[in-house]
Length: 350
Image 1 (cartoon, rainbow, N blue to C red):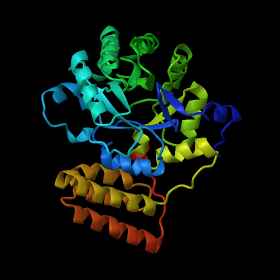
Image 2 (cartoon, rainbow, N blue to C red; image 1 turned 90 degrees about the vertical axis):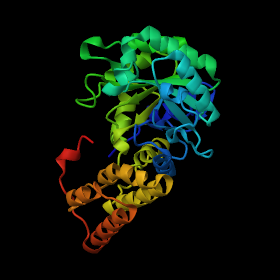
Image 3 (cartoon, helix red, strand yellow; image 1 turned 45 degrees about the horizontal axis):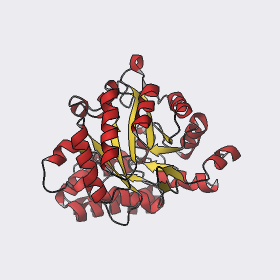
């Protein structure tokens, strides 16, 4: 049973202040490429109405050369608070992109300095900026000067185990005008392997005056509370734990506010959400949305007998009706026969 200490409850009782923006939740939904589109955010917000949401990261250079904004920048006027995340290595392009983000309704602008993917880092974006702290600081200053909303940074603890420079890097970001920093407790070399080194998040918290958000290995209410207790962070950001489980941000937020754990969702409830997710993606993006839904559908399908077979079928659906029929059949079968937990070790690290 998870317990919320009086000290932690008191520390998190006030709104999260990001510059002049106040957020009535200490739990944030991480930006995830190919995941956190408008549809996904709507599902997360249903269970976490006061949490900060983030768009997928937007390429500032690509934005400079197009007349029409990409669909990943589309935000619902009602989905507040919302942040648009940008990536690049060009201060002028990022400043221009930030202005467009604010025009679209962003409450804050987040700069990605943590993505470990090669196609991002080889062009100077993402976590490669950890190796260029002067440029990273110049980027933050340029964006701060260009917009009136708070500018934030999401990063990692360093490039490799031998190049952990997050303390100096974080100080530079604060000095440049960043109003909040999210620290994923892994190096770029780790990718998503091994355990997040939360102790570095605690060290960052000790040297900064702006809010520090802990990120990495947040898969449950228990892990969220443990991270907050060990690091002293001002909040936590959920990433991979929300894949196929858009309920997580809301579950953690509810616990931090009330001290009560919500009962775990059944496989049928998760599949009902998957069904709605598929339908919404199809209505929003058409056939492209169905193709994008395949990965989501496989993430939802776990934890019950027959889940592996269902994943295999959902991963190759060609149209929305095929996917809906598969999910409906699975729901009917589970309702008729009950369900049994199926051990699926390959999904533990999801």
